[in-house]
Amino acid sequence: MLTIEGLNTFYGRAHILADLSLQANPGEVVVLLGRNGAGKSTTMKSVIGMVPAQSGSITFDGARIDRMPSHRIARLGLGYVPEERRIFTDLTVMENLAVGKQPPREGAPTWTPERLFELFPNLGRMKDRPGGRMSGGEQQMLTIARTLMGNPRLILLDEPSEGLAPVIVEQMAKTILQLKDEGLCVLLSEQNLHFAQMVADRAYIIEKGRIRYSGTMAELAANAAVREQYLSV
Image (cartoon, rainbow, N blue to C red; front, top):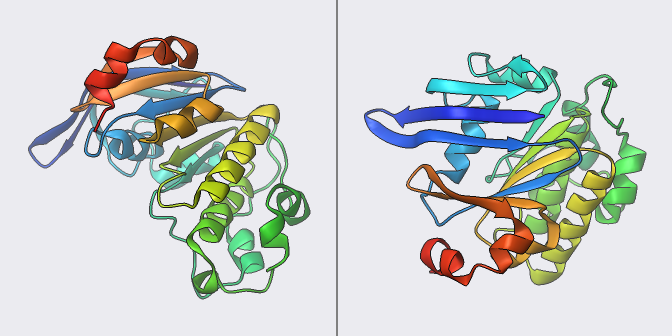
C-alpha cells in the first residue's frame, strides 16, 4: 500500500531524512519508533506532501505521490492525523466531521457519523459540542474520526498516544485494532513502546533521519540491545 525508497528531506540546509526506506501493507499496522527529533513527524509530513522530498520516491497504492500536493494525495485515499490535532475549535463535532467528508472509495470502508459514533461513543454523546470545549483525548478521537470521514485506505497517525490519560490510550489502541480489522493500512509514529506493542505488527526504528532497525514487534520485544540503544531515554 505504501512504499518509501531512498527518501531525502531537508529543512533549509538541515538534512532531516537520509535515504529512508520503509513499506506498509494493506490490513497491517506499522509503527515508526524513535526519540524526539529522530525524524518521525517529518516522515509523516513527507508522505502527505507537507514537506517536499528532495530525492527518493513515495508510492501509494501503485501511484507515485512524492511530487503531488497534499490535497491531491488526500483525494487518493491517504488520511493524515497530525500530532497537533488541528480540529476546528469553533465548529461542533458534527461540523468537524462534515469538513472531512469525501465520497465512498473503492477498496476502503465507508464511514458515516453513525458508524464513527459506534467506534467513538464519547463523540456520539457530544455531537453539538464545539471542538474547543473538549478534552485532549476527545479532540484526538475527533481528529481521527474526521480523517476517517474521507474513507481512506491508509491512515497516518502521528504520535496518537502523546499526552493522553492511560484509559484513553487503551481506548486508542482498541480503535487502531478495529481499523486494522476493517482492512485499513495504518502507519503510526510513536515514542511509547508499550502502546506500539499493543497495536503494531511491524516496527521501524529511526534515529537522526535514518532507519536503524526493522522487524516484527515480536523480534523487537526479544531484542533488548536494540531497545536500549535506540529507544531508552
